[in-house]
Amino acid sequence: MNTSEIVKDSIKKINLQLKKKDKILYDKNFQIFGPKSKLDSLIIVNLFIEIENNIKKKTKKEVNLFSDNFFERGFKFKYLIDNLEKDIEKKIKS
Amino acid sequence: MLQNYKNFKIIVNKVLVQSSTQKKKIERLISKQNNIYFNRAEDFSKKFIKYLKKEKVPIKYAVNSYLKLCFDMFKSHKYFIKYNKYPLADEKDAYKKVYNNIKVMKSYMFGVAISQFLWSTHYAMFSFFIKNITKPNLKIKNYLEIGSGHGLFFLKALENLSEKVKFDIVDISSTSIKITKSVINFFFKKKRNINYYKKNVFDYKPKIKYDFITLGEVLEHVNQPLRLLKKINNLLTENGQVYMSTCVDCPSIDHVLHFKSIGEIELLIKKSGFKIISRNILPVEEKPMKEIIKNKITINYCVLLKKKK
Image 1: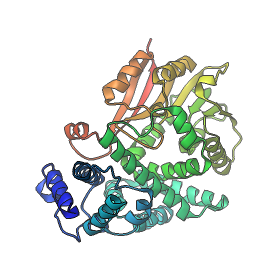
Image 2: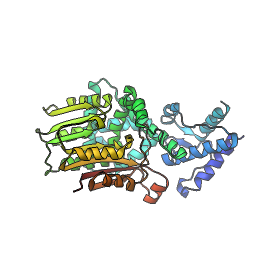
Image 3: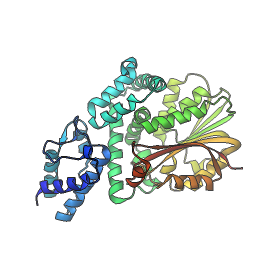
Image 4: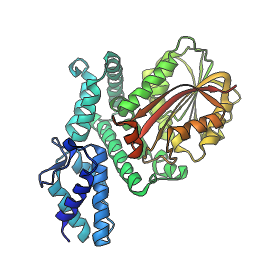
């Protein structure tokens, strides 16, 4: 199972609902949270749900990409697609 | 603009430094406001910072409480979209997890107090309340507030109503009553007839009727909204008025009642014997209403009611 593929597929699906200027680019350095992030909370929620659903479909695992310690990391620091993919890998393995 | 409002600037800057997500929203909000907003926000911030100092609470704690509130809303919204229900479904669970948990409730109250000036819809509801409680033709002998929370609405009522008014506060949370009492004692030095009751509203059986009742952000916390509104109607004098606020599609750590539309709320209002005097419908995102409804984006709602005759 390839984490990047799951994220890419999810982004593709979310992008269908977004205007051209709001579309998410698949790039390891793309900021989900951070000073350069252009995503609003609604898009982030939809993206995370889409990824979680994709993970379930492909691995039968129920994961929650939002956790309480995300609050400490996510709002203060940059959270990139790269960080998200690493978190997904960890959660799938655990 | 902010440089002229030093206390508000302290709070805003502390939020912006910690949250890039909040940065855009707050900057957008501030860019659209007038002097009344800034004067109110500065007045609140000045008092709030003084209050925190007196309570020996660091500003950082209050700011983190606000950010925690934002994150909790975010998390609750994700749960709501994924499972099509709120994280909690029973007021007893909310009591256990939030209202009766001093640590959670204290943080929640500080967070909501700040949100009153940093969330456009919360500020709009606060303004709606101020507009209606400061009307010169109001004849109020008895004022009742149910669920006083952080105490800011009650403080406005105290500041604007006559010294002859009797004020009764009913709240299920002792932490909330404690915060309201300490806020009022700290900011309102004049003598007033105020009574605090730590009670479930259904167990509150006063011998008097009220000319003005405030029921802000309470309805979505109860299992029996119709019973509550009928009770409020019964507590109101013939020409009395009710300020009420609630919300549609608004998951939170302690919301148990899911209103799916404004129509659903207004049907309940009608069924409980009220008539709408004025109302404000406030989606939290600036998007077309069609999109708001389709994507289940939260809509805040506040209303001024009177008895249907």
